[in-house]
Image (cartoon, rainbow, N blue to C red; front, side, top):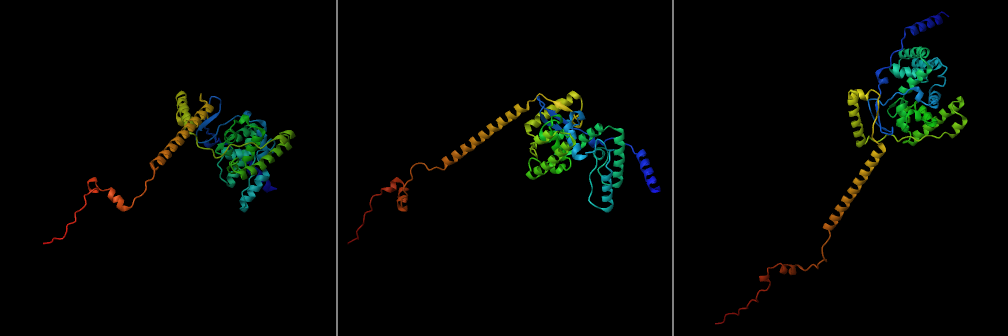
Length: 353
């Protein structure tokens, strides 16, 4: 009894002394995105592929998909999962396999507020900050911060970059199926990022995607009809090709004009999370590039065909093949005309006295 009271007093004292730290710089830096005249994605500038979006732009089914995949008691818990913490502590003491199972609040604290080191002191601090964060911030604020900092693979930090890199859409355009797929990826992003290009990975993610949808249907986040009609979404191919030279030229031109108008440097532009709307038409640009490439290929084929024709012509025999004469006849034909018809030699008789 005395030990329990002492432990509770120590925890209460630690809770009082701990402060909620500000997000570390790597968690708040954003990239600047360039879009064409129709809002289609051109490219980005920045060290991290992240653009923060307010929670209001995240469709509710997508929010519920993340909760179903990562922390189903998020709406009602106190920011921590005592049983998961107990398993993690036991594994650390006994040297067993590292345990997961952190709540969304704990994951947000670990990703955005603390370092990712795996120590007992950091784990205890994470739990204390998560409890204080849950008591001083709304669930919506915590979920928004989590969705903007969690890593989804394919270099995407945050749900906006993930929606663009996996499906080529903005966050507010995500469907139920796409949201469930992104939620399923959070568990193992470095593996699931190959979905769409690796059949084995795609099949594995499809099973986890179905598990997320089943949990959403069980909790009432989606209707049974929505669950039955859900189809596994199509993913963009990964890894993508490098940015085309012409498109990169457009981004460079737009960035140069943007820094002049904003009065900032290129480095500040790349880390500020701007969305630069340009007058470029990506569809027309791609069509023009394809036309030029097609003409270049045609010209190359025509030039190669001309070279083959010239080579064949140079090696072709001219005229009919002449009969090869014996060597004696050939030597006689090579003599000068004056030597070809010499008068016959006189035979001189023997001298007779």
